[in-house]
Length: 376
Image 1 (cartoon, rainbow, N blue to C red):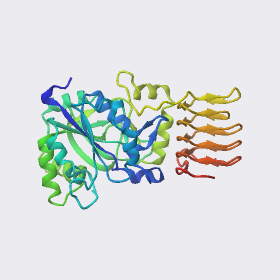
Image 2 (cartoon, rainbow, N blue to C red):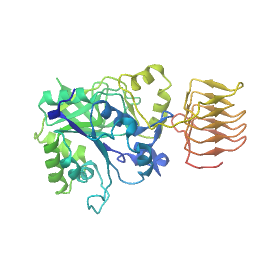
Image 3 (cartoon, helix red, strand yellow):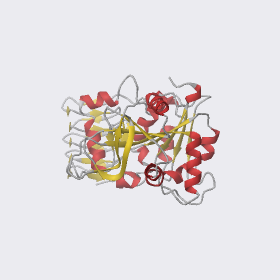
Image 4 (cartoon, one colour):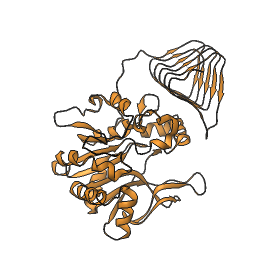
């Protein structure tokens, strides 16, 4: 357990990678993007923080964050609406800034007042696109024991294709980073940054003020890499050995949703010892007609399924009429597939209507995307 003198403050970046998810984040933050039928991407990092007794969380936003605010509400589901706990939205202009931030350092400059007023000796910085079930208390204990200025949370992965790159690629010995490369190719011998960092609060405040005042804005390139190469900081690494779902682009987002259909992956991400919470909705159970066919799917509440659904993720209140077929697809809340509609390898956003007899076929690496509210 984290003692009072070791408490962490959480900072979540909700918009940093919006552009990489294209049409899916055109009108919403990446953090509020639906995932796994019932959840949003932010649910995972926020749940991990709540499970580690991090009671004060700042969510740095840029634009299009109304749906994120609607989803989180009072944060009662995460038990973060307590007297001694709070979740604060930190938009770019709230502290008198005149420009939308370009990188994490500039984004953190809008959080300085929030951090100064928050109780806690350490700060946990996290992106919202990498999903896992992680014990942040163990990360903090490892950081304090290391004596380093900053700890990077990382894992090992085998690249799918030769020449694949990751944003932060590390080499380390005995938990101490010996080399850092950005946007670099990697192998299973490397450690890959997960967009999560633990840093002492006063050091972070001083770093942000110093760097932003000199025109620097990128946390990884301008601060982490530069200071490491100049020998000004020791960097500790916490190696995470469980499932990590990296949503870097549309194909990876599509694949990671489908990976939840694998029992081992689903059980690891949704570990009951460390629950993943989401907004509670009082929906009726889903209806399955006697002639429906549902095979290897995740189906949320409130759906009506008369047709065929295979290897797919189905969100709340989806209607799949007689003769409609859904295969290898993600169908978001409130969508209706009329009689005889047929989709395969598709991402269907919220409140879409697919007319009778229409057929849409994509590919695993290039799924067809229908934007929210589309009628075809």
